[in-house]
Length: 179
Ligand code: S3P
Image (tube, rainbow, N blue to C red; front, side):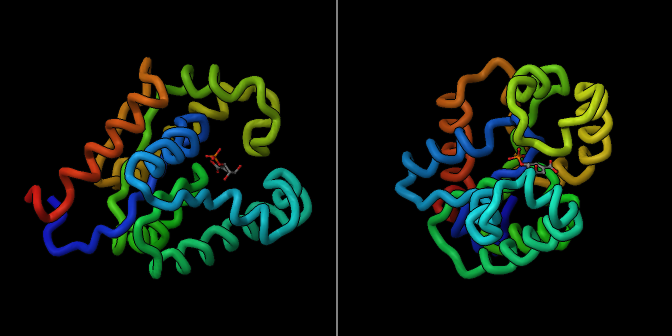
């Protein structure tokens, strides 16, 4: 499946609320890898929360932060990377991640995503009216990008522990020792 590709890292893509950060942290613990969350890197560099970056600098500026961080990741190894939900919509980001990482997409239905994110207010794209409709529309628009992942992991009715175990399993079988 992965041919001659260098797979030094593991990248998690997928919609908001699919558990990229929580499953990613656990997978990193299991693999003894470093965990990196692109949203947290942006917040640290911008000195403000993602919602403030959106409000003060706008979404295009946020996407530019993402693009720059993805570029820097090519030098990393033994890292589990959790990405913001919109990051793979820039196909150059996805290509770059694939040059050094196994890319897994965590998947959940719009209804499940809604249940998981409804009590939070830190996701600027879902703060307007009709969040479920917004989730449906955004998820449908992003599906073609998410489907370019190496592996799709369904997170419906699975605990974080089960998702992390599946992620680690997929990483192990993608190693050259398991062609
Ligand atoms: C976004 C998802 C968020 C964050 C930002 C934009 C998106 O990350 O990057 O609010 O465009 O889907 P999570 O997927 O970690 O919530």
